[in-house]
Image (cartoon, rainbow, N blue to C red; front, side):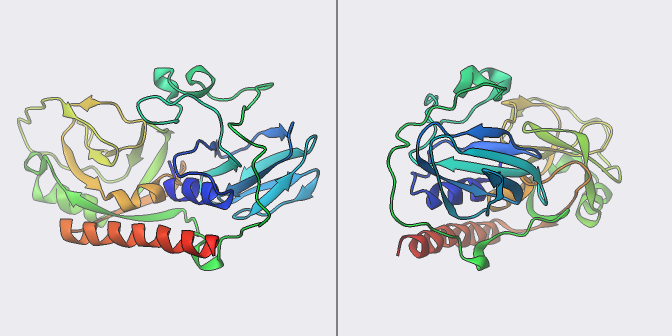
Length: 281
């Protein structure tokens, strides 16, 4: 859900970008190491190693028998724990993600539960350095989130008033939100009359508007098709920001252009390159 934190956690233990990490939402587990290895936690979540407070955004050594106890997120919604060498879950359709709704991925496609054993691919690999993400790159998660959107593709399904409404008002994330999508609450977005809703492809970032006028933002576990008209799409560079939203947070949508979205994506990719070069030097 937050690709930036995921990728940085992997960088801090010199994993590949596509290696699997542990995604923790709101509250983390208690883990016991059964091998000497290295870990890194990205996000704003409290955690302890053997009862001592530990720091996020850096490499940590853990030894056989050490206990890692995660607490609650302080800000944001999610944190990511990377293990040196990556977590051993099956590759499905080119991804090591777990899709619980479809029963695909690690632990037979489900969330972790008590007494689970998290298998590493090669946790014995280690390196001498302990890396730390420079402060200027550490994100600050806010309960007020701003994202850029491209209007459309079914813009003709909405009145001008409806378009102005979504672009000029914050919407709050409701408790009916998960990895599939965020149901939002706020001013009703006015739709046109006699809308002929035909199901078409759905991708993460789509801003759908059902008959009640309250938008739904599809997230990483989005369904494949849907019939609600889409008023906008969140630019891909802002999806990781949305991934840290939790119930009660507010989201404001700002119109952008395709050229501006491309420039923002390029800046995003350059940032990853800069971070990687600083960590590897």
